[in-house]
Image (cartoon, rainbow, N blue to C red):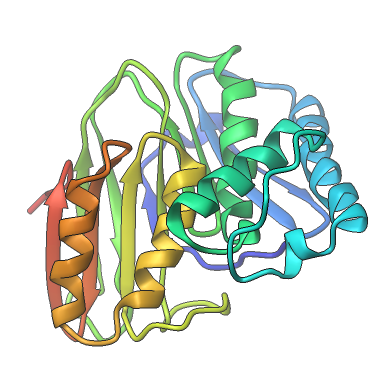
Length: 239
């Protein structure tokens, strides 16, 4: 479950920012108050172990590249991964990073009024003021980093990015970057994977954007493709 990509540059207060690592999971966390890092690590460990334990009983949960049937006896985090990935038409493990950031983030949101968690290509955000986030497009773009503005919301939401050029995650497309803003990090992760897999030519992008407009849980899309940028929804460039 290791995801080493760093698609984002977070503009956070460093005194309330820290990293938590557990086995193959590495989270960057920023909050509006100081937290006990060991307690946070226990939360991360709990969800990580729930996922890895379930893999032992159902190996297809890890290996399948297509949706699998829901298991009513699975832990909630596993069921959410299966449910969200099925909506996107991909395997459940495509949403693992988003699931961990979402579940850990909601735990921390009970203790803090503002929480941002980065887990590889995925973000959990509970923000009480507008934020700016740097989005890394890859070395083929100039500039390689753009800044997008995110409006505050009254509930947590998620962002995920997927690329066939950046990082080592399995990807069947040919796109520099797909970034999704969604109602939660699990859906964002699953759809970032699904959409990036399907983009091989520029004409594929309009089909992706048309589909995104029909899905109420998807709020914004950014596509970086062969030195061109495409935007839809709640994504604003900050110049």
